[in-house]
Amino acid sequence: MSVQVFIAAHARDGLAQVRRALGDDAVVLATRPHPQGVEILASAYGDLRGADSSSGDSSMAAPDSASATPGSSRILSELARLRELLQNQLAGFAWSQTRRRDPVRVALLQTLFAAGFGSALARTLAARAPRGMAQPAAQRWLRQVLIRNLPVHASNLIQGGRYALAGPTGAGKTTTLAKLAARGVALHGASQVVLVAADTYRIGATAQLSAYASLLGVSLLEVQDTAELAKLLPTLNDTKLVLIDTAGSAPADPRVRDLHVLDTLGVQRIAVISASQQGAAIEQAMCVYSTGSVACILTKLDETPQPGAALDSLIRHRVPLAHVSSGQRVPEDLHVPNAAYLVDRALKGGQLDTPYALQDQDWPLFAGVEAGRSARDNHAA
Image (spheres, helix red, strand yellow):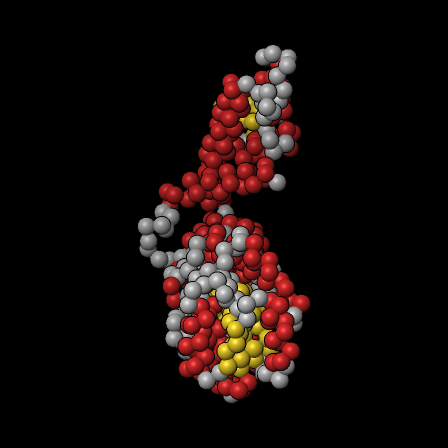
């Protein structure tokens, strides 16, 4: 096993030297104080595997192969665990040093993290913040950048067209469709709005839509599959607004692929995403349903105290936001999005005093967890 010694003024600089010399898979074996700062002993991961394999029978292959012994696997697993622990600790130290050296940048990161924005967007924005600003000016800069980057749909959907609302189960597609239909009736008249029920999976879905159609005085047509929809659409060429209610399903459901057939029929898809979900669920839904969609409708805004995760996903995926929904009333609780209002609400949500809000002593630990997750993602890539 070949062990190399690295000496640096700070642990962060030492780790950077280790990565440059030995790669991202390098294993830190020990650290200790040094007159010049810190001394780090490290080795390449491949050297460790070779040393461990050569210490046993020559017929043993690499530790991750079928012939690896339980002992070798345990050694490498323990080394990996120790490396991750050390990386977490060093990331916490680096966070504390950065906080002393660049408090404004750290304050921007804390603001975004507290509001529910993800680390990818938060770090990108903080890195691009102009240097030399005082903290109040930096916070105003952050607000303006978020407002400028939140994509808002330029046109009103109810002006006319063929739209299919698609999204995960429970996102509020049927209620949102009824709100759009009510606005369409007010603009074009009931004879120029048609609802199409394509949700044949959920019990009672058509009955709910039928009740809305009856109240609005519009026609409701039901189709069992895309083949029936393809035959129906040509008969609606003279109708101003056609709204299609699709079946909700989990993002991993194979049936989601069927939605792309709508594109060939001249139907524009609108992704309906609930803002009340966890950030990971919003991201998963956005990855699946926003692909090929012309716009997005954010629902259940009234049910989330921190909409930062939803805005983060919209900004990164560059999906235009057409409407926001904030209640069950039809048609009152449907609004044209106001970027400034949404950003202000998200940033205000980061100030809520909840058991989930990070305290000052939690931030170094949080930085360590983020560093560990980043290292795992880089290794998997």
